[in-house]
Image 1 (cartoon, rainbow, N blue to C red):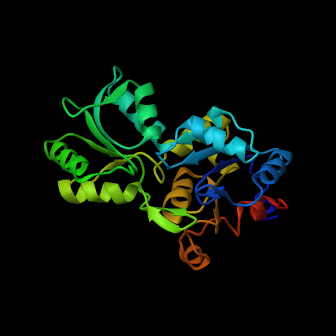
Image 2: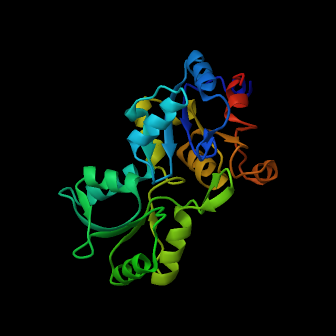
Length: 263
């Protein structure tokens, strides 16, 4: 298996979309894959830029594919947004929110609620009910000097039908309308990786980041000092991976081939 080339690895930080599944379709026999990961004695945490699903929904989805996981093993970009806002505003407050359940839940747990007035930030992620009116209100608030925070820069995400618009597409629309770039909390920035390392109690050099995107998973892992592995089951081609500098430590056809699982 490819992972044998990095004998120092004690833990994995795993992306989900494009690594474990595409939409509702699993990529390989996930129960078998994680049985092998467990047999190898590796810790693992799931870290996703996806801001749509709640932590509970991810736990349920993973268990539905035969992967036993606790909520503590799942982190997402809304958690990074909530942590950042909580540091700035310990008492919570109002935000103008463009997003879905995962972002709403994380912010509510940190004491922040959606409002059009008296907001401390405009927070945006993937919103499949995005409208011109939401774009208009967000743009006007940002032009008045309200901070603009984005969950993640992913322009697209993989589905069985092909690449569909991601949070980055919505952020780009708001940026174009307001003239202001968002402060991004998700990958490739260090917030999610550092939280995963903290929860697992591992050092960057003994942790492998596994993802399907060069500009978020691999770049973020490299910037954090982790080893990196790109899987070719998502949005990145082998040619793109080989031209990326510095290259990922490992390039695998799939998570199964990376860990040597039979599926």
